[in-house]
Image 1 (cartoon, rainbow, N blue to C red):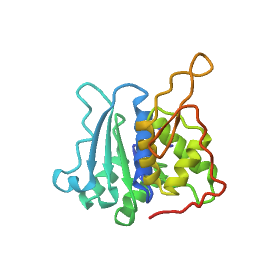
Image 2: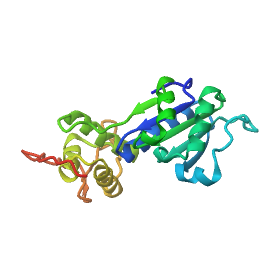
Image 3: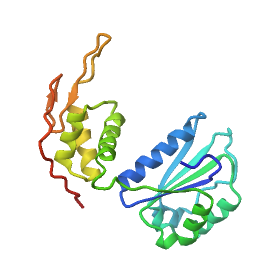
Image 4: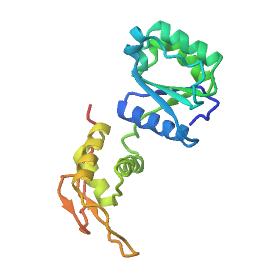
Length: 216
């Protein structure tokens, strides 16, 4: 992840959910220094509203972040304004762009890449089992839960290699599974079942063979 010297971060990938996750992690890093004012817009909105003022410092000196979704649809005027901002940035402002492609913003994309601000975001490849398991585990952590290997395997068996389906199954499991009440120090662990049923200290058997499929 580029450091704070990158005034514009461009997240590029075909999976919108992964783009959101990457942008959220970047915002979390920006918040480690304290307060952060975040303006969340879609590129189409900038066609009428124009690019927000990124040059004038905040009244209270609070760092600002502009998050632009669907940045591949940035209007030419906004794209040109961001190129100018990249050349003469404001230390208190950071722009995060989420784009599924760069064909319509090639000049901006190239200059952001040259500045070290481009981050390519892609799902794991089909055979990268560990990476897919990590993706599922990370989704559980987003819901304040942990999952054992059997629960992770069950999610993948139900959702296949589909990022959106994985997020949906994890959300269902996290919403219905009981909260952890303890572990070695007087706590006991709970396990989430992606079928929506609650499970307490009951292992979920991993199927002998999981047919994984990439859903589009």
